Length: 585
Image (cartoon, rainbow, N blue to C red; front, side, top):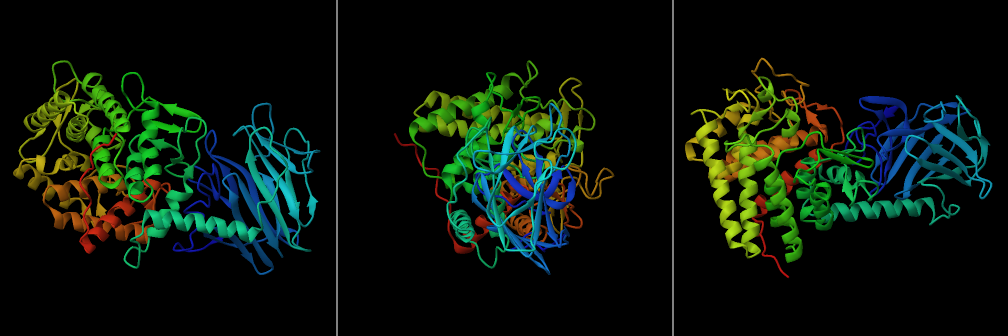
């Protein structure tokens, strides 16, 4: 399969073709780091599952086609003809062909009592229906035009090919594919194929205009970034209690409890309702101890780890960008954020100690950072810094709610954590980490050790100046490497041991700017934006070559680009974000 270069048109090997609200997409990515020869219908209900394989044919044999995607149309092109796909609505796709045929085959050939597909012809409307154990859903194929020439495996048990075959030798053909539960009325067309294309295009363009009205020649990746967010959005189903932007519609098809903050901030100015849904989603699953889950997806909520408490930092950014919150919503947000903060101050502090700890690198979001090499249960400077910012936001919220005593209490608690951070973990030229059990300290070459820059002007001038100088040593031509490039532990594809990531970049850039290092912050913003414009929106990037790594359609990377690009455009135009508005009744 030949794929097109990225740009206004994009490669489905990089970014899946999907539609806002849909739980399925079309892509050759059928498992983690696994690329098929053909595009598949891939569902994300109960996990990532390839359901149907789309095999274009010419003269009855598989045709080598060029596949081109735009936000509203997916096209296969061959010398003998063309095949096109568009979404009619989130659970329905339309597919048509002229001169090219289609073999629509179940991706799994084996039907067992617990897995696999079953194919039957529905006697009610004549449509062919695949059922899939893996998703617990049905996939109905209705012929709208042309003739089905074969349907192997109807009512077959055990192993074997199951599918629907349309020939490209005669008249043009068209089908509809639907994903649904147990039953629904026979398919009824909502319009022509071209009307479906037009509607999808209008929906996306309206979203992009609301999200990034500032986009232009200086922000050439903004439209594609908007598409990554738009297409990764799913409607509420299962444990997804609100419209949610998954991290990806490749294999990273979850919402993690810090990734969502960056998506919320990117959406806040233009699509505030969706932004607020992103922020609140993880709080819908807050446990009785105040902890947020590690991750949420359609059929699973995991609590085996947590993620760092960046939510106070994120909320401040959201409130600068969004319409003001009603008092009742503000009060509820305060209670949930207070409970999340209380978790760290009770369940995650050694008795008699001021600073909280992580239990594993996964808790920090920097899973394998070298900070955690000596020990895993660790008091770290980034955690303390994030909690200071979260307590400051709680103090602001309490003040707005008229809770003066609470406001003072949170301000004093933030002061104590900040002073403990500086007294116990600042070693004169760097922050160190400390074992929660052993009480021994160490330093590393991880960028994580420099994350207290998020405190900005709250840090003493000598401390923030030293941090800024150290951050500069991490810079490559593409942005801040997560491990010092000269470190013996640096790896080009080392996850948090070298590659550039969007969240660390956005947090560092914001902290440097608030610490008074605007020139360095500008340099980081410029390099990361250029990196995304060159290499797309991968999960992370090789810090030396700039190549995209891992999952290639990661929403927090698209959001990082949009956050930095929007801020850059504001600075160019002289516009400022408003102060946080007061609550109203």
